[in-house]
Length: 445
Image 1 (tube, one colour):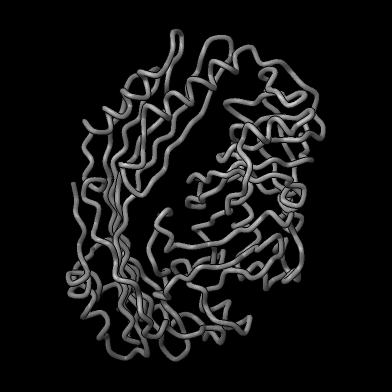
Image 2 (tube, rainbow, N blue to C red; image 1 turned 90 degrees about the horizontal axis):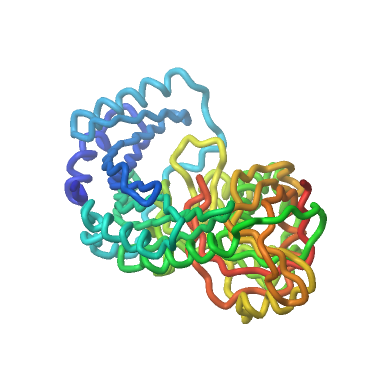
């Protein structure tokens, strides 16, 4: 398996590019990732792959103009060639008066040593985890999914003197078990390391869902009470991070939270933070501009407190970067990628007991934005949707499409779960969220 390039080797590679002549500033950003993935279907492994990708992105500042070039030739010559290409690009673009300059020197926490056990996990190890999943399937059930292990190494250096480097690892198992008569169940386990992934537990959870969801019955669309398990909650939180908290959308009035600073936007039980330094999440302690990440109180006790900013949007907003910049240039502006909805005091069982007539939802899928300013999204339930009557789960129901404002759902949240889990939504990294009981949730078809 590949290993980390390391801080010293990174600086050796980008050193000549940082000394390029006829420029006002240079930034070098290293992205090095490697992972291995074991896929399974019909309770058998059918694919085991590994990949490695290394790129070097050079940003040049010259007379107020910005040029960026990227190369996969991660050598001293490759870095210089990319820097020269970026310098040539500055001849073809206009000046950028909103450019805030490269990040100044700021202290970055010392990175933890690379978890080589996770970074170098073998196909045999992942196969053992898959076997533990399959062992939990009952008669007539089949498991499908994937188990990926890997690492990311991020490095940044610029001519202002800022130098950042950190590696981190991730292990992610997702499981769908299908049973007879239309039953299916989902479970996932995401952690910074393989020690946090329990294949047997994930298999048992998915198999239990599959058995309980056989013979789902149709139900009319409408507005229901819902109990969302963490995987379903993560869809709401991650999409809110994408369309609501970013400094660019806030400044341009395209966010559902634009103009709502210090306004009650959710139930008092809802507090959402972004904290890349929390040991329970996954990520580097600095952003793609070299700014240290800091914990953000995005929503505290239901009140919108602040958004996430990079250097450009912070300058426009008259504030300072919060360390949420993406690789430049990017069309989305800054985004929070380590969201956490803080746990409450209710168990899922207590939420179900408090529901007169509603739905228990395992997860959503195929979710898209309908109206960002209204925070309205739409998607389908999947792999375990159940009817609750008089405080008891009475049976599985067929999947439904939901069309729902995220902020309205958070305003109508009456109970928050005690245990938060890492869950991943496509594109948005991972978030740590608990289950929620929401008193009004709209299913449109």
